[in-house]
Length: 202
Ligand SMILES: N[C@@H](CCC(=O)N[C@@H](CS)C(=O)NCC(=O)O)C(=O)O
Image (cartoon, rainbow, N blue to C red; front, side, top):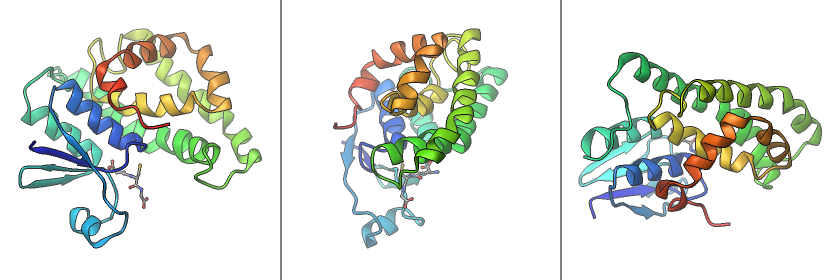
């Protein structure tokens, strides 16, 4: 085994990296790292996860890791060559990391799972932003099969693990079915081996 991914399987970023490996048919081993331990800090200067180790090479930050995996390994490309498609893919990756993660995971999923303080008023106030984000993704998915174009790209691997968690919340369970293109896309992703093989434990 030459590829090791450090981080808990519950992390959407870890799942994104695992999905990238699986889509490229790259075998990997998921490794536990004790948060904030000296080992952790030696792998990641800011003590975050995921972390990739490929032979003697250590790489942090999920967007860098997934691009590296796509470049280094054979298998279906996860970044389109076409400049506009790649531009849209990059736009989606940073949009998901900067906006979607904050609203959907940090503000909704973590409190609903009991992993952050729950304030029902704050959750209720999230609704317009949640619906707006779902609507923007739904519109993109009405224009092409996947988020950036008609081929699966890294953009899809960043958003799908987040939507999977959102659908488990009461708010997401009510809202997501109203976005037909998003539902169609999510069904497609949920059938992929990369998604089923990276499912976090219940
Ligand atoms: N920009 C980083 C974000 C990674 C990140 O925030 N990971 C979370 C878990 S999903 C983490 O390490 N949290 C620990 C902490 O905030 O101390 C990436 O893309 O890898």
